[in-house]
Image (cartoon, rainbow, N blue to C red; front, side, top):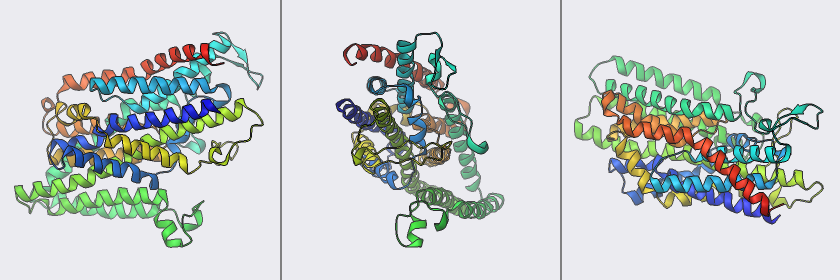
Length: 444
């Protein structure tokens, strides 16, 4: 039990580090454009990091918890993964490199699990409980097909989104920028497109709303408030609100002078940065929830018959067996609190990289980048994919830079960031493997 408590504490420490490491993702543009002072910006971001507790479910947490097969690992594996993730996060923060805390955690977990499998079974095959031959690399859930044709999961899908997340962010921000640029012209075409988009948004969001009868655990006795505050419904209402707000601005953009437009864009940046902070909190806090859930599951597996206190009553969902997941309320509350506290601590070295070194960011670019980043995070969270908020906002900033000209993006800085992204998972995995072998000497 002592080791389990240590893992939970370290996981929350990692969540805190994640907060100040990734604070730049949400605040870099509002600081660069002087919409908010640095202190105001971190307060703003931290508040919406914590508010995500009431918006998002636990789909990403489930994906992270199943990075490795919990029936085949021990607590030392998870401890090694968390320690490696903390070390790599602190190093990249110190160097001012906006690497992915998400991929650091995934890489550490997977690397420690592989080291455990090699230590126990070697490189040769071994007989599993099902009677078939297994190998050391199968301890990691590399790929699992989606149920009923849904989105597949596994480490390979997470790795694929190292490329796909920034590309989605870049594409979304590029299209939003083009939309805004055309809306600033005194022609009817962009306005027709905007009205059509508003109608389509209302229709899509209303069709995606979950009715009261389909809500598993209503939050209130009132049908209306239960539907209004269901996490799934809140998330889609936010998507609709973001698109409709930008659309409303586009309808009046051409009638504003330069000063009025800039003032309106700065106010919209508050909305876009808040939306991105919500996505950051919802996406990144869930990863730590997943690690804590996996640690409890492993503890139960390695101590059969143990009686768990109600505050540690965690059950990982299993769609194949029809098992619903159980997560005590204190776990998400603690995770969201830790990441919000970390965000309050800043992360100014990475703010400089994100806010000025990639491309020059104005209020116009800030709105486009943060809106695109937020929508990308909501989309990937809906698919239960733990993507990097760092990669997403970096891609979004690159996308708005491309609308000016290709040379507006400082590709030397961008290439250095990409190398950091590529190396994060393997370095974290190797580091976690080494930490596992060291810990195994002292912890049986």
